[in-house]
Image (cartoon, rainbow, N blue to C red; front, side, top):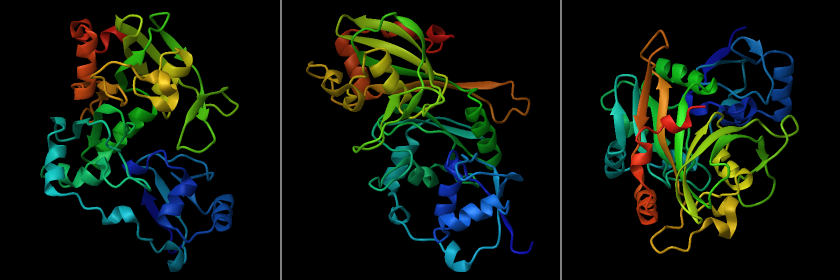
Length: 337
């Protein structure tokens, strides 16, 4: 059919629903017409029929039938107007903890969103042009961290690297270790949490809850271990999520362990704040380490490990509480499932 186009899904569009992808690319396309195109197979993903709710993968190909020019005309957004300064680009370059021909690894600061939104102007995605380092392509996001979570985040420097890494994250092969300061001491001191999560309706922004799998909940698994304690008030937790649900660690710590992450008023309420001078009222959660398959290795057998230094507010809290950092020299050792 003439006029049919095939569009590759970008890395920063991974996990986007197919209907929302069309809303971004074809804002004039009505829901009714999209449903008909899907129902009749005129829209396909990677050669197969698809539902509106399908979550896309980076590198997938969307077959798009001929659409009226009025319906495919892009609409301007506020985000397009944001242009980072050279000082902001330079700051982003100082976050780099590893760089090679395939990837760039950053220690993302707490408080920086990975992507923009209705009330978010400055975000990591807007800074990627400043992280080319002479490369021919703009780096691509392949996974995410919450805005208030600091730590290791990987960028792909090519479409092929993005494809390999996105597939790895989809298959859950990367190993992620987070450090958290929690209020109270979990019992038992180590274990596995299997508690499905679902969205919690209501105002106040996106919020999750423990739910029933197969009902409205998606499976969520976290391994945890207490590394050190300032009993009975607080503990240093190492966490290894095996799934990547929204706010997974925050909900599991607050609702399952009964020890909310310090500074997490969203899930812990007033109980999430220590009345100690010097401990800041912000989220004390840090993506400490990440192990990913090396995208430059065609066999897929080689892996790379990265460790990110703690942000100042978490390091300060650990020092005030007297935690012994020598107890976790290898971030992965204490959490082998």
